[in-house]
Image (cartoon, rainbow, N blue to C red):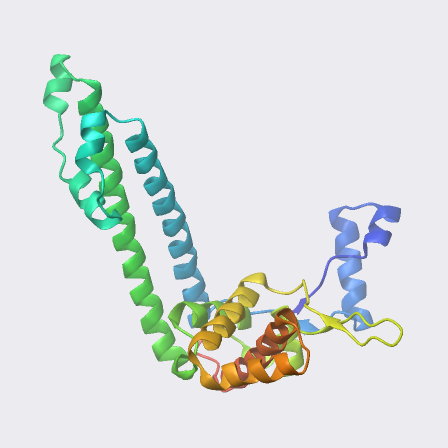
Length: 274
């Protein structure tokens, strides 16, 4: 099975778009050899990680939304209640709101006030935040165990934690043998240099294509190393003295990080298919 890119935009404008046309263009790309990238498989531990990652991302987004709603309710809450909760950090604020009593008995009697409704709302939102936080912690523990069992060598690299390792593994897929070279992996991650030279000036820019999640993971690796890794800091200072800009140095460092990750993931053996 091969991955086929989108059809040429100029050709699409001339001929239009439909499912039969897309199928014909895909078949021509495979037969001519232009489409030679093997597709990722989805029946191994990396597919499991992808499912867990999806769950974590949605839970984090829902938790952030609940936190924003809770704080928005506080802005318009009764001054007495707002003063009661003022000065609390997030963790203490959520614990305090979760302890608010449920006033459903008074609600049935028709004696519920705005303050009581506000307290109930804050309590429900705090309980939701706690449940989502517990869900995120559970998924993170599952992802950590999966990485430790499938690719522990990634966790030995400076700047790579379980979350970054999972992102890179998802980009690689369950069949790392489909990656022919470190240059192909760099292009897949969007960190391969793109020529932008003109006249006597030789210049390369960042690649704006590729998997943007993998690109962000390599970005985190580089900036973590710039903070804690002496070897990366020495490299940065040396390239600054050579006249390179910070952006150019970061591009080079992301390319080096992609090279290191590529040689680590190539060591992975294909797992038994489920």
